[in-house]
Length: 125
Image 1 (cartoon, rainbow, N blue to C red):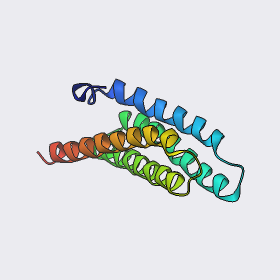
Image 2 (spheres, rainbow, N blue to C red):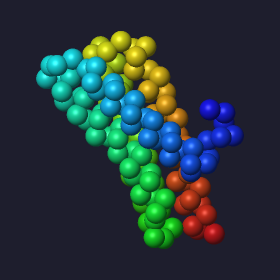
Image 3 (cartoon, rainbow, N blue to C red):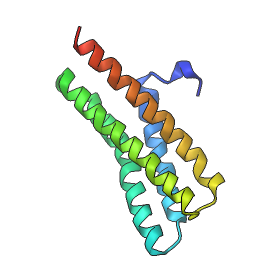
Image 4 (cartoon, rainbow, N blue to C red):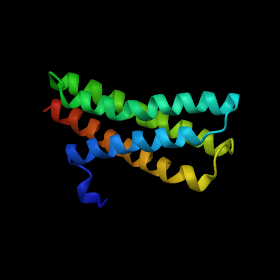
């Protein structure tokens, strides 16, 4: 996706939903071991929460509500990055399988961070 296409709420809604689906498929491939179960549960929860929280912020009742819910989506995206990094570091799945999902989660985190910063700046005007 080109840089100019990032900002659209519709595009970000689709990207966060696709991230959730990719995370779901990834967790299915994790080994059936204690660390696979723990990391799988964590990344599944945070990876699917990004889109749910982003959708929720789109229905914010006020600017403050929008900003608060956007911050939750940003936190979940960043947490997803953390769990994906652990999956790579623990060598639970091949790096090349996880890295594309991690890159997308990092991009979404950056977009949500920038959107939150802009929303806060606009609120103060």
